[in-house]
Image (cartoon, rainbow, N blue to C red; front, side, top):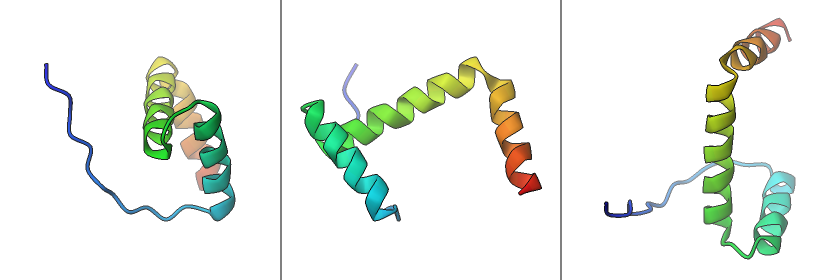
Length: 64
């Protein structure tokens, strides 16, 4: 199977969060985009394992 071609995307992100992610990427010897991609994939897997957690987070945001 061929690898997917990465495409550029623009996102708004807090500078403090970006700085933390960049440091973690360097520690992992990855590029920032690769590190962010892996983090997103981990979150997706975590939410698939615990779908009720996702619902609880949505309801807690509604209450705020």
